[in-house]
Amino acid sequence: MEPDLPIARLFGRSRPLRSIEFFPPRDEAGVDALHAAAVRLKAAVPDFVSVTYGAGGSTRERTAQVSGLLREELGYTVMPHLTCVGHSRGELAAIADRIYAAGFRNIMALRGDPPKGDVAFQPAPDGLRYACELVELLKARHPDFCLGVAGYPEKHPEAPSFEADLAHLRRKVDAGASFITTQLFFDNEAYFRFVGRCREAGITVPVIPGIMPILSLKQIRRFGATLPPDLAGRLESAGDKTVETEQIGVDWALSQIRDLVARGAPGYHLYIMNRAHSALALAEALA
Image (tube, rainbow, N blue to C red; front, side, top):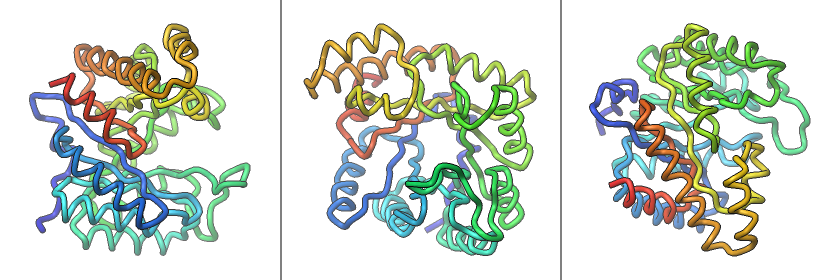
């Protein structure tokens, strides 16, 4: 196969970009289910998909397997995630070389969360402490990598202030990141305030909003994102009614996406938890 097109080149198109995130399952049965979902999601016509990377080695081999399946069997443009967790500089360089040799040209470069049970992030021996260092390593290894990085409309939970968070984001972009994908949010004003702060801080790359169609109130509270009172009230009224809750999630995500696009967002990235139904419902409504 030909090497993938860098995602940065897609932003010049006359329409907003659409992307979807998958996470690698832990067993072959899960891979089969993901494959079935990915086949269905071809109908949503995403411009690219991303594949997450497990902390502490939990799904790293699956990331490579799923990325290859999505690219080679289904023809997606795939952006694998890569994190600093548990890797030395040499190991990260070797992984980057394998990704590049396989034809991938896009990577989501992240510090990564501490492995389960660890309170704070600790770099591996001869490893990297920050995502900006990973961006530097990847661009030095293969300058034509197109790199995405994470942004936090409601501030990274470890950052002491918005100013400190934006300063770190600026370092990632200055090191070579081509675009930013945000953590999920449910109040669009949080996204637009974040973009405004980015521009004031001299960050000019595209900022893709990350949207998650809600599956349950418990799930969203676990992620820690702020819920607007109206949305929280609807979800509490739905209680344990799964179908009703999912419909509320789709409706809210749909209203978010329409508003974001109308107000100039460069596209949207869907966090779907490997569930095709919500993404397909959104694609049908947006069409």
